[in-house]
Image (cartoon, rainbow, N blue to C red):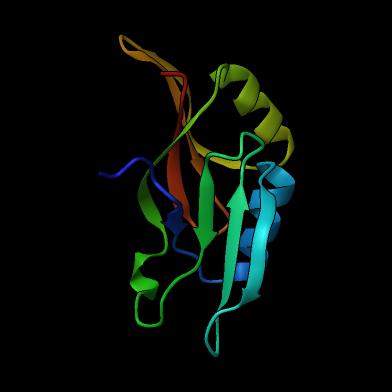
Amino acid sequence: MISSIQHVSIAVLDQDRALKFYTEKLGFEVLVDHDFGENQRWIELKLKDGLTKLVLSTPEGQENKVGGMSNVIFYTDDVKKTYNDLTKQDVEFTVPPTEESWGEYCMMKDSEGNVFCVSSS
């Protein structure tokens, strides 16, 4: 049976710009960065826990998937601190820290216009 998710792919238009955003602003580490076809690279990133991996890539003809709301939700122990730290890194937020009955969250935009929820629950 399936035991885990190997990686989640994030649709990006500019791989260099996205790589800089995810490593310099969000703290991901490069696991793999090599050519993948004629016009792409396979860029695989991981968080320090080593369990969460992202791939920054958009297959040719799928550029319309870049931007807008993502199904990926990032977890943090402290939404307000993460929001404050990332705001200092010039990360754009579409929703500031907000308390709900189920927990706290904010909404962050990456360099490519993808919007992610950052949640403590």
